[in-house]
Length: 555
Image 1 (spheres, helix red, strand yellow):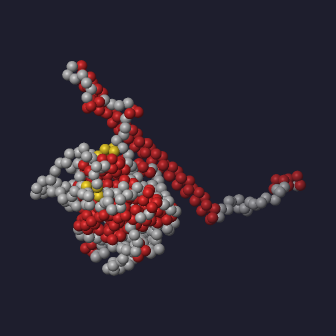
Image 2 (spheres, one colour; image 1 turned 90 degrees about the horizontal axis):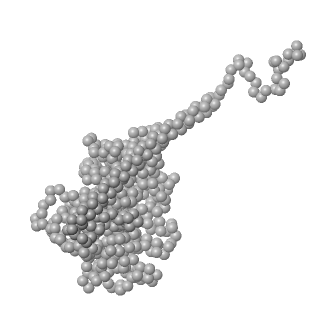
Image 3 (cartoon, rainbow, N blue to C red; image 1 turned 30 degrees about the vertical axis):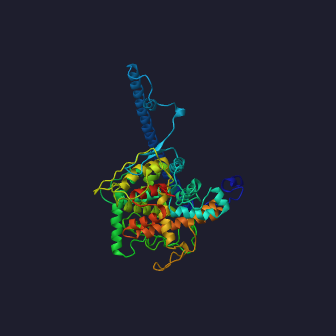
């Protein structure tokens, strides 16, 4: 029997002995681990399938765009060939032997001589304005190159900036300020000030994936989609949403009016920030604001009421929680997430932010909506064909233009579309040129008026929760003075950022104050008239776009 020992005895004692019933023992922990691994592999395959689908759709979009571009280039080439043939036939007939200027413009230039131009229009009374890259910078250069024989004033606000910086020798030399008693300002001071206005809603601390304008358009598209017979679908682009803004704002105004009738505080457009908040960026994990920051905002109430948003993390106004948010990062059937993904997918692919988690996109989008909504309420209140009382003329910038009086006595317009024209001929071309453009870059004049409205009332962000019926003294100087000084003196980045965010908070408060009035036009026009030479709607539109308004001064 000793020879058979090896058949039933191990020469080495096994570490794990076999079970007496010859079965595999698997604990509950092992089963859960296997299930988790299987779920993870399944999720990876699903995600890979989604990524492949998105890549195919993105490739199709790029191919369609390439096809349209090639078709457009082909049409341009055919038109040029036709022009050349007509010019040659015209010359061979002996009717003309000298190449005219018009013929020279028809003949296409060589690729190295071709120069790209862009053009926008501000009002239907004026021609298109052509520029290369920097619209406002080129307008300033053109104005100062053509205004050597005249003296111009830009309003008391710019003159006060000049007086402040004139008393500081370093800034006086850098900004080339002379003759403090003159109402005119230097080109350098105007350029620096307009740049500060343009950067108000551009957050410099980190690279945002989308601008405040894009965030606003996504929110408005989601809001509009909740109505029957809405004019948007999966093929809608951000440019289409811009052209639909008048329709959307009419619905938005009705919703706000309904909320106002329900609650006296239904038209509050502000945010409930803590008193210690100095910076715009969210301090909770870099994504979330303090609890109940959006609690009283009328647009948030409206979006929740329309089902556009179902929940904001940490808010008391919505406590329902869907378990889908834990699994997918978003709430199931979230309208805002869906339309953000649809509109931003061509630009961002699969990296589309979710507003309820990256709340700085939500906040900046709400501020952009307030800005556009305020413009819609103001610009269509008066026809441009009425008799003018303003003194600004486009010939101040382009002397070669002829002064044409388009005014009509007793003109009555049944369908004023100043806002629509500005969106179609200015905002859309500027967005196509620079798809990360922000509201302050589009309308620096609006920033100037709203910030000054907030500063005039003595509002400060640290005392934002003070009673609204109290009168607050102005304890600080013009926030733009501090911001420009910090930039010119190259102060620390944190100090510059704090000055920048102070302007942004004033902009939010100025919009909240202005939108709370039944007739905001009178409020803004009074401010713009006293500080920026604005006297009518034509002046105001150009000031909104340019950020300055030159008026010939009699000295």
